[in-house]
Length: 147
Image (cartoon, rainbow, N blue to C red; front, side, top):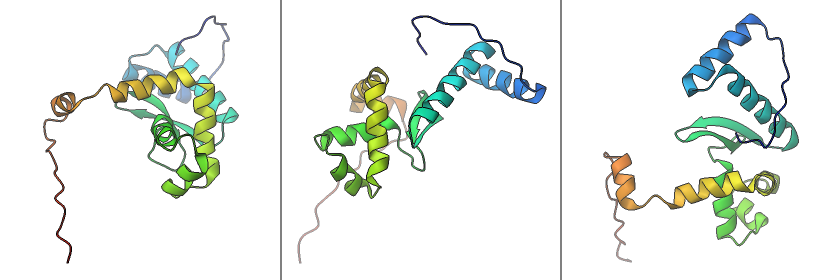
């Protein structure tokens, strides 16, 4: 999490919460201070944006749409492929339009984060994919003859 400036705010946590925070920080290679700052920022974003949640993923913590397996950047890729037509994306995903709009709103506010995730995704070519997933197999679809 990048910030231009920062402020120190101390807080008192129950011992059990402090231990959980330290475990989480250690698991991610963060300091407890960094972990608490990230969690506070995520909580503030959840409060500001409907349907947004944060989860660990193979590339770090990411914003997701609640109740789905899609990260916000993935929804935005679909939105862009539909020329920013939120209603059409909602129909395509079988979602209420408000969920797609929530992803769109979040992406607008945090465009650097979302654009960076999309750029990372776009940088993966077939060779890189097979290096990362050696168990992957090429799947070729053959059209069935019409009857």
